[in-house]
Length: 269
Ligand SMILES: Cc1ncc(C[n+]2csc(CCOP(=O)(O)OP(=O)(O)O)c2C)c(N)n1
Ligand SMILES: [Mg+2]
Image (tube, rainbow, N blue to C red; front, side, top):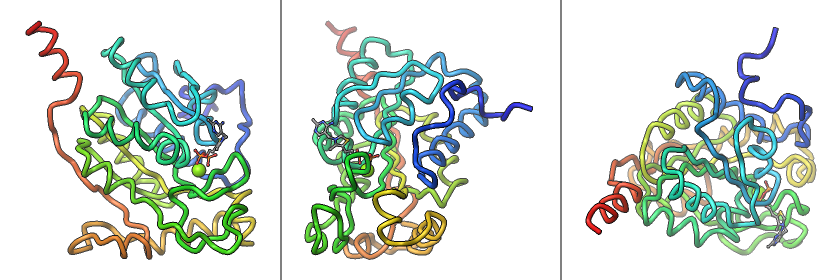
């Protein structure tokens, strides 16, 4: 019997290139499950846009939908172009932390500020996975990587706080150890307008857990243990962000989106 989620996948390309124990497959499954539960049977009305990196490979080539595999850091501006030209399509950006928060960080900020009609999923494995596990803007303080052999002295960026403050309609963070919450967050975000941003903390097996000498499963247990729901914090502070993984919804609002505003401009003109 065929797997109930196989329709969303380019089956002929299996197995994927992802390392055993990589978290990208969990994110992909949670998204597929969300599609299924929303009765979205085919992805004909969807376009995925990704940049460069392992995470960017999730939609392109593996998801059975149209996709654009663009250059490093530029997935969001390319996705904006698609959405403006074909407003009836659902446009989803998928990328890694280096791609979305590093080289593409400026685009992230302004897409959120404009409340651009995009769903952006950032898979945060806390390193530049594809190129060897170098330090990223999201790497925790003190972590040793090939480019921080004495430990990272940069503090990591809390992208969820930044994107929420910039004006996005929906922002949430979960980890690959929170499958149900992640799936429900995807379902919610898929039904909303404006800029929706979901960060998923994940593991890089070949560049991180192998070096730490622990299994991906053990790492998943660790990130679950370190997770605190934002609702349980009186006031989120940056120190708490540095010492834990803060999960849950950072914002959920319903401001008019960019597309709605621009169509009014077109009418007035
Ligand atoms: C303009 C440009 N700079 C650098 C690179 C090299 N490069 C390829 S992937 C990557 C990092 C990807 O990291 P991330 O987005 O976190 O994805 P991951 O592989 O960790 O999923 C870099 C720096 C590139 N391809 N293009
Ligand atoms: Mg990464």
